[in-house]
Image (tube, helix red, strand yellow):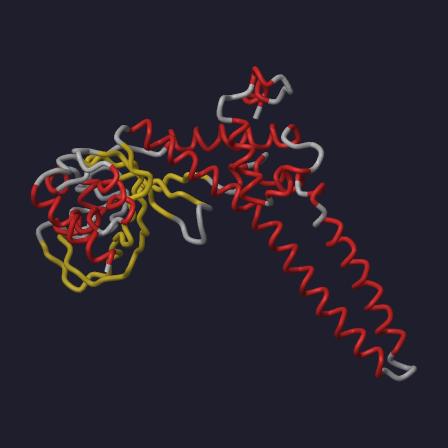
Length: 319
């Protein structure tokens, strides 16, 4: 993280313009009362600066943009692999709530850039394969396919879209800080329930059972005190440091090269008849499941067919 060293001084002139708003955004997302205790905002400069810089760097590294439309489905092998059929390209775009909102806010826009995420799956299928001059039937194969196409962070330009993606990544990291705190709050509730149970058992215990129960209760009270202390607002900075100083551990892109034929069947690297591998970029840690992501460029948004289908999708959403 040495490249971020210039950000960590207390001279506000050296701060990124986004830093103070980012600190407020992060703290408000975890616990707004933190703004009222000593150390705010200076205690949060270093972790927020690192996380924000990392989020921008990660957003910049998302591949693309690739053009997504009927023509690219026919010509671009990568786009062809992402969608099960040509009609599904339009269906994926028109079913996007973010895209519908964007078109409502910018009705005159003819193109946009956005982040597209998909779930990638593999399933075993039985098909045919050409081996030399012989067609082999009932060959067990692995088919790669994508579902749940989602368009997020649409914007008029690529840079604006990537900036929005960066903030989404930053918010995801902040969400993990909040989750750490919530887990301790849940631990506290569980410990309170266990304490009440032990005390109830003590009230009815005989002399033989009491020493062991008293020992358990003492350990529980000690553990509770540690948990309660960790939930003091002054200790929340440790949660920010744990996540935001090491953002790559919690959110990252992983490249997965896969060789596929035109039918989406996975092939071995030794198959000379196949073209080179397609590189898929998987976003790890954004939520409970991984996403395959790319930046996309959608144009001809004002064409009659697209506008009509988008309007129909918006009406269904409103209903």
